[in-house]
Amino acid sequence: MDKSKVTNPWQLKPWWCQPWSILLTGVSIIGGSWWLGHKIWLTLLVAGPISVWMGFFLLVWPKLMQAQLLEAGKDEG
Image 1 (cartoon, one colour):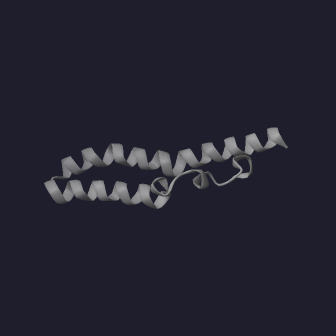
Image 2: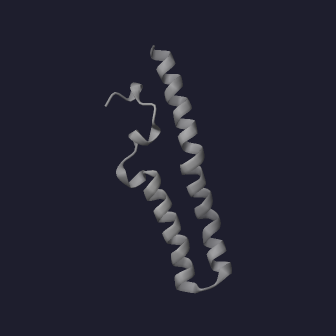
């Protein structure tokens, strides 16, 4: 695959690093913390960093990568 022609950043990631797997992993970890402990403070403690991780990789990273890919495409063309 010619990386200079890619405009979708998810095409560059393996199957285990796709949006569905990030979301499934995060929700499973948060749900698992509730299932194991049944304590809201524990679940919130786990949910904080996991939500930041999911937010970065599902919202921020794709926009940054798409901007970088478009910029790289301009430089070559």
